[in-house]
Length: 466
Image (cartoon, rainbow, N blue to C red; front, side, top):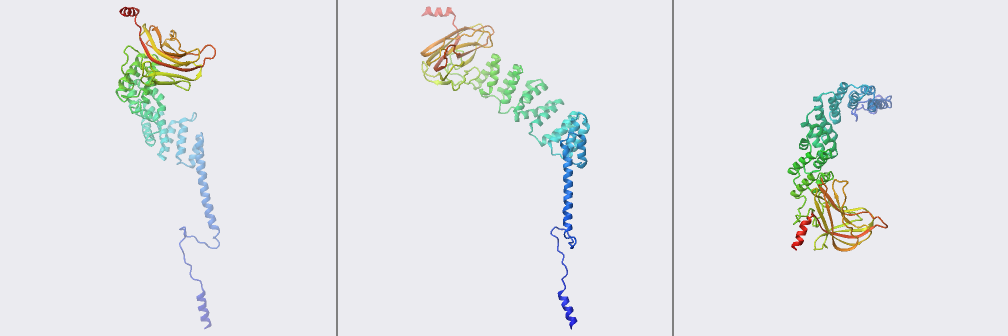
């Protein structure tokens, strides 16, 4: 009985069999007492060592990216042969090294770089440029196409591709790139105009195929100005005619200011008059109502606010000069011009001026009505006549106006020299000569007239008739 009891007791106290549970990490690890502390440490050390090796390998392979040594870059590739950046860098070194220049090797490594990483537009562009250098046009075409597809709006890339097609004598493929470049990056205007004109030799072809024809006329006028500065005014005028028959039928006068100013400043009076007439015909310059057909001035009675360009009045308003073109104190009622000197300075003021076309060897008479109030200084405003394009010609002037005066006429009669196409007539206040010359006060101007001077015989006949 004792034995049986002992056996039963032993059976009830014996441990139950061990149950195996799946590891949370998915690994079946035997954790015997002797390995419980050692194995996790070994795993961590192994993983750390592998990561340290990979970090060192990548660092060692990447370090040569800053190197200009082909041997250094090749050593980096030995550790990481699939590194596209190193392949690309090695290709560039072979393409540019003054000692180890080898374009075939450059092509080989650049090809490998784009094969490893085809999403880099700059890799394709560098490959295309190298292919261009060795004369492999088919390779360059394909590589440039890949690069452009990956980066369609990078201006420098459009410039390089356009140059590629010009160098391979394919202007029809080159010019669309330059047109897009001008549409997106106007700062490329000068180099693009220069390159395309040199390649085509025909400004009209460049205008048709390169210059954008959209709503913004600024690039077209920049092209006109470029032609003028280059001395090609005839082609600039031909293109102007195309502009106003095409995209610029209703261009604003202000857009043409720089073009008009260039023509005027370089004494191209006939061409400037053509542009002025075109702007008037299009309505960009308003026509005067009931103008005096004998008066050569435009807007002689200041019924229109001046445009400050072309053959209209020019003036420069500032803190020391105030203009009112709608003053209602004209002698016969209506508008006149009032100019105030509110601060008081002794300065050379070209107060108001207009360029007027004239004939050479012809006598003219300038008249105007003037009134003043409180004009100080001993140097007052007066009219002067400058013969445009003649630096040595005399400068006729009227009498000056000072103090306070009622409406009174001022007059200048002059004879235009040979070869003169225009005169600039201005209301001018020169520097004073004696003592304190600061000028303050107000002057009014109205009924400015420039007419052919009547021959003395005609005046005498009219006097006899009276």
